Length: 109
Length: 109
DNA sequence: GTATTAATACTATAATGTAGTATTTTAAAT
DNA sequence: ATTTAAAATACTACATTATAGTATTAATAC
Image 1 (tube, each protein chain N blue to C red):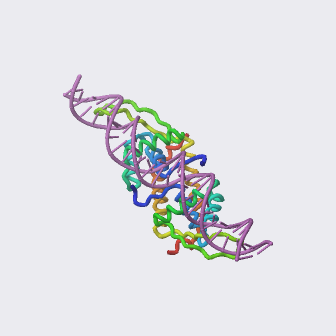
Image 2: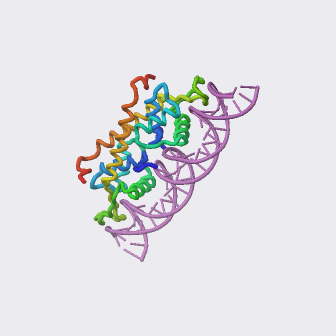
Image 3: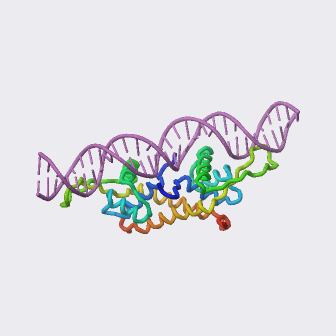
């Protein structure tokens, strides 16, 4: 297996955590993806992915304080680690490189 | 599930087929990935992925003619379909969009 | 304490990623 | 014509990632 394995949905989640910097937890991340990617995200799918990303060291998390809002479990806030950023850069780099190897004639449909 | 599902390795393979336009079959595709992505690709992994991509309609294939080289089964040549190109564009677009939503402060490590 | 709410945790299954081994097809060697 | 070796694809099995439904927890209002 590869060194920095990063699946497609994992990448989307990682990018969205970065996008919601300072306020990235389950709900905001979910909304960010849905708003920008034109797709529905189930809370279950998101949660397992967040866990995996943290386990891999691409994300860190901390538990937030209780708010004055009505009820609710405390939020778990996420941030992208330097290692996670590195993985993001790497996959992006790799694809850019590949795109550049494609001749113009390849897509003359 | 999403409309145009395309995994990470599938994307790499699809891009590599486009890159080897006119000469894309098992061996050349494998070599192209290894040369550009700094990773090893097993022939088995590649083959299952090619099959899946064809099944999804992202690739077409045709059997090549016998060559004058020493032995060997006939090659199966692949080309990216318009539908496959669309999937490639779509995932790239989506990620670009997401990158743009990330504030500069997000990666101040 | 009980109800209500916001959020995360758990569990299960489908899709994708990965690789080892087997088989087929072809032409060269004899 | 038969055997042999090479080049390639096909098959099979298992690991990881994707997805979503349901359960549980923790906090506040009453």
